[in-house]
Image (cartoon, rainbow, N blue to C red; front, side, top):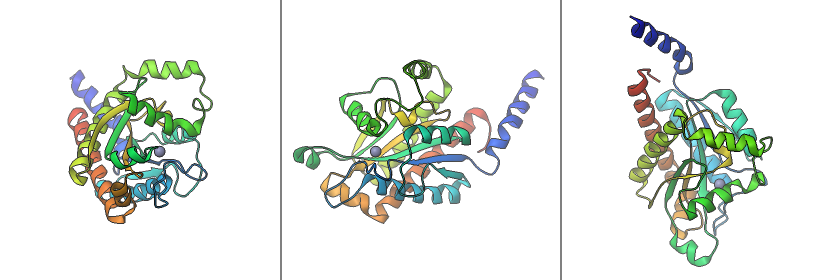
Amino acid sequence: MFLMRFGLLTLLLAWPAFAGGPLVVLDPGHGGTQEGASGPEGIFEKNLALSIAKKLKALLEKELHATVVLTRDRDALVHLSERVVLANKKRPELFISIHANSMPTAQQRKLNQGIETYFLSAAASGEEAKKVAARENAEAGTQPKGQSGDTLSFILADLQRSETHVDSSRLAYAVHEALISETGAQDRGVQQAPFFVLMGLEAPAVLVEVGFVSHPEEGRHLSETEYQSKLARAITAGVKQFLAQLEARDGVKP
Ligand SMILES: [Zn+2]
């Protein structure tokens, strides 16, 4: 009896958040004076990220009846910590940050391509992951504005124990597998690193590096509308898969 009542109570408490479909916050990386990575033909990460995020928003609304909030919907500078504050205010079911990669030297630019999907951890999963986080964090200075070192270490220490962290890893795998199978891009794996834009988020959160703007072929693909739509379709499929996993676990239909 207690279990039944508890189950019903959980459902009732969870219901308003899910009514009318899930709430999703999408975060197109960079913007304004922060251009992010750039490719040989004048391709900027900030533009790609926004374009993919808009396509993804439309698909999530159409296919999942989701309510989708963008941390920026135009070419504007938004501080990393403001993105986190905005997302937490909305209390979303999930958060996805969209970025693209690049390599510094001509040799590396020719060789490196593929997709990486990240979730937050205090330590990076490898040297490359560490460099990616350092590059993506650069626009914030040394640490998120308004967060002291103590707050930061608290957040990071708390991370491993939280259910949200486990769900972030689930979301990362679901989105990553869909991206690789849909695009046929090189699989650079699900990785972990200390991204400022994922720190302090109270929802399952991932950061996707959709490809290398610096690679001659992949860079060209990334600027094409059709390929961007493919990426958006794949991420939508991954989100669907993730929400189905949550539903199976919690018994609440998004
Ligand atoms: Zn970026």
